[in-house]
Length: 515
Image 1 (cartoon, rainbow, N blue to C red):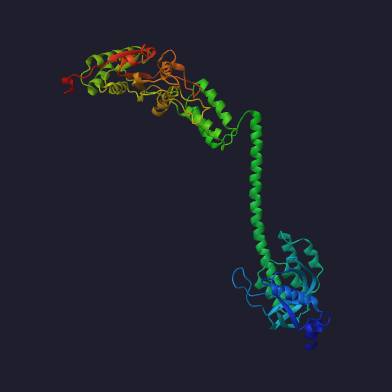
Image 2: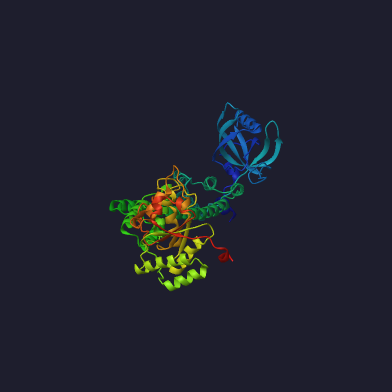
């Protein structure tokens, strides 16, 4: 039994004679977090003075060997602690000194060694070492274990993006179990402690088992990473495919004269449809919406075009209130809101009676209440609106000098917007409000235009059914709007405007009426 066991195992001393002799004293190279194995080629960059002298001394010796020992870690990134007890003797294959004094060398591992003690610390480190042997059980199970390890490492090469495919052929040519374990351990992405565990295991069978476990763990990690990368790649491929399809769809829609309708634009298109735009305005909206689909959403022009379409969608093109043409009720409202002013009330009731006879048609002269401040001109307008059941809008014209306040700005200007007529109609949400133009006698004129001339189109019954705001650039019907004006001094009202108005004088209250 003892003889059979002896035949299955090969002791280190039986194989040492076939390997290069390792001196008992060797210059030492602290390897930091690097663990070197026998037969492994390791590039070395020596920048520390101790290492440079140690490599130089070894290169000058007959053996040309150094001892490479890993170091215990002090913290997360620094390997500056004591040397591990086990290391590797290595031969200097090639060495070159750079102009800056650093040494570049190629080392090849020879065998496992044990550090017995440090004989010299300066000018380079010299250690007393002992060569270590290893044991191996060459039973039938060894070949099976080596085959499983080879297959596992080939699987790692397949999954890894860093290991070259040539390593698979190199592993297949390794028949020595010790060299196989060391070679694979040197190429695995493992921690220093795990590498050292392989180095210090002198029983080759157990070393192979350790490497097999490391391979299994590495495969598990790489498969998870591969799955994650596949998922990410699949998502990227999906997005790229969707992007290509969208671009193709845009090209097809462009050929068909259509555009890419986003949910936002789809909602805007629906609002435009519900607004019941006139034919001309609808054509303008369709043209602008088609143009908007071809403009990138990050472009400033996109926001300008989108704001314009929102104005078209929000205007009361076909929304109005029902008139309450009850003269008796109107008289009651006027008496409720105002004391006295009998002549003024009578003329207002006469005017409303004419509107009733015309079946709600307010076209005709524009009422203009003229009188000193505080005589109830504005409140009379509010009473008329309440009597008719219409919404009330008041716009002060005092000091207005810019024609764009009435007609709006053209969209070519930065910050352009519609005139105040269109703005107020959008705000009230009705196409037939009572619109009071307050202080019409205080309109001004300067280099920006004449607002009074712009008001002519607004107040002229023959023109206001096709009032065109510069911003909208399409006609809006103002013929259903009941315009009422106020003034303090009639003579200050521009002549063309005054000709279109029916002036109703409001005298100041008498002392008795004030009481």
